[in-house]
Image 1 (cartoon, rainbow, N blue to C red):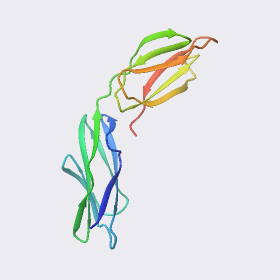
Image 2: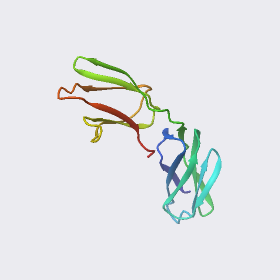
Image 3: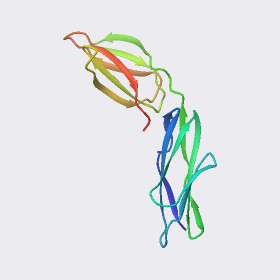
Image 4: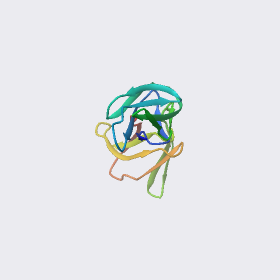
Length: 164
């Protein structure tokens, strides 16, 4: 009996719509050759890959929940991977709010989709930007703080990073 495991994406990964998700599976059999790996999303076949590397891209996925699985076949015997669940969300507009200065810290909140990655950057001249923080949002809104810059003005921006 073959074995098959989806190695990408990670279970419970979150993507921004429209999402192109690279699905990768490792498949093996103790003697012989894996003749194909068939990929499914929500029970619907996407494609069968006949040789390693066993991967494909599910393209332009709309917002929703997706259950991914792979079925490997060797010598007419099949095995099914564990289901990997992913979520595709419509990304919210990034808005900064609640700017505050307290105890030498400048802070604000920004809107975000939990599970998506964001970068906070600063600039003193609106031309040269430096990344201060890159994170995967755990909550919405996301709090951010930075020590006060006593040498002049400082501007901030937040951007959503592309899907992995």
